[in-house]
View (spheres, rainbow, N blue to C red):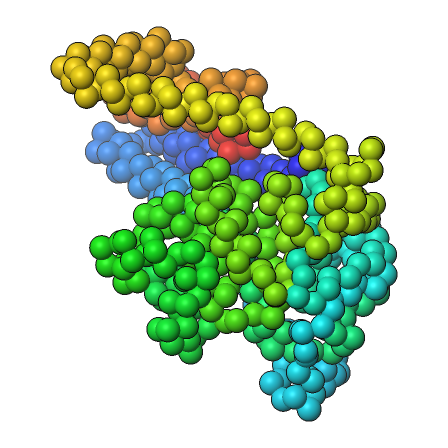
Length: 497
């Protein structure tokens, strides 16, 4: 991650130096104008026509010119935003102005005509024949390595394995999100590469790990699976997904508005609505990508029952994290590093003593047993707390107040808990040297304004003899030059870091 950011870091550093120099140089020039103006003004004292009224004219002229110059320093901040916008819009204009000169093949033109794209029959077997694939962003790394598998029609086929082993890649290729690097995928003997993507996806239902529900009614969320579905179709799909009963218990039933990010529904309820949305299109192929991995035991049980009834007699491919959910699958493929290392039924894989699948099942059973014990302990503790609250509510409220006070005291004892700024510095303590340098540069940059006012006041209010006045103004002019150089350096460091 850091290596990928190095190029952007170099560009940001160069931009910081350029805009720091620009802003600092403008302030530096303003102070040099002050210095040269006062220096020229004091030289006019040698002129025989010099008079006191001329001092005010010189002072006014110097201040006006200096202020006009400093105005450009504030404009540089907007120039930086303009340059960033220009860099971003270049890509947009390049895309708009790009003329597609290469010859377009008829196959690349999306149509719904069955003459160009034959209608695919999903009632047969699904086969992967020596399929290899690499993502466009990482063409040198194969996500799948010449895999061959078969998902029988009307049966449930399960993909298991660790993260990044290629399971979800198979789903993406079935939906034609990407083109194969080599090999082919067939459905009922027909290559999916010869079929229209829209027609293909129309017959496939997908349920993911985190389904997306829109901020509208439950009825509309299910209807998005098939726009022309009738009310009976939607209710039937909800019944198949075991969602109809809990929907009817809601105040507005199917007209209940799903809140933002579905906060009004539990995880199991969201999954069942998503399953109903997939089933309302009456798909020939159902793809399930770890649909129960993010649910608790209660929600998993309800969703699994809905999945089992929905998969009966339908071609189904399941990606499973919790292996107990695919024990009834007709065939199981075990993935590792883009390869299929084992295959068979649950019984045959468990019969192999040192199989990868058996090791994963044994490990999950140990974790599941401990999780069930912890869940039971939590239920008992919750029941005890509820009984205590029912028996003596006043005592409970008193204890609750004491606990809240204790938590507040504990929070206040945490380092920097009362200051967001100090907490932020504490979290970035590894960068304390650049932060310290930048803070000092900001202080210097801000202090130059006040110092400039002090120098102006001392220069204009000098009351002494001519010789002393000339020496004092010349000294203050030199200090203006020093101040200009200082603000130039401070601005560069401030913007650079």
